[in-house]
Image 1 (cartoon, helix red, strand yellow):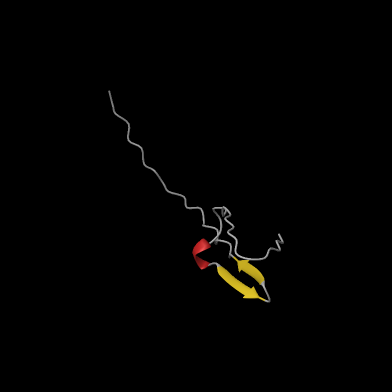
Image 2: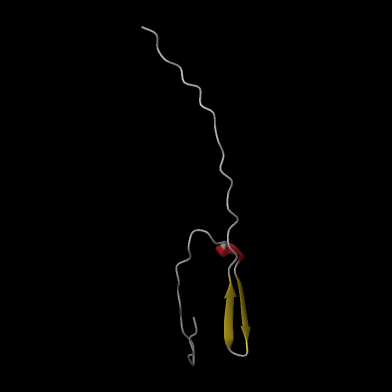
Length: 57
């Protein structure tokens, strides 16, 4: 998305859950702000065995 404005301004966006917001990088070059936010690494599914006990009557 491109926005061209003069003077100060404030912009807020919501981040999706699958990004690493704490590792965001912001660069300003020739008046252009570029923000790079890496994707989160997908977690592996884990299978858990469950032993069930039944009550005997």
